[in-house]
Length: 118
Image (cartoon, rainbow, N blue to C red; front, top):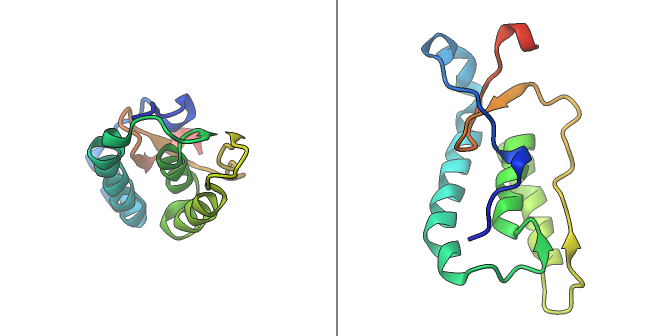
């Protein structure tokens, strides 16, 4: 299993006082939990076979973090469509969200950022 790029990990922690602000992030974090499960089980059995960096599953994690569940899944589907035996491969980072205003945990989940950082 490939390691997540450094931009996909953070040092924030979920605070109970942010519970209401975290509700809109639930679909994104559920999708991230599914991807973490996939990366720990199925992806791990294949090893590093992706022609792209980051791997397709790491790309999916970054896309979900940056863009949310719906657009993240769409970006991941487009990436999977580009991944075929005749692809040249190379570096293919997730396009950064211009107004990303959340924080990331050490496990890669998305939490509301501190009010002072907005």
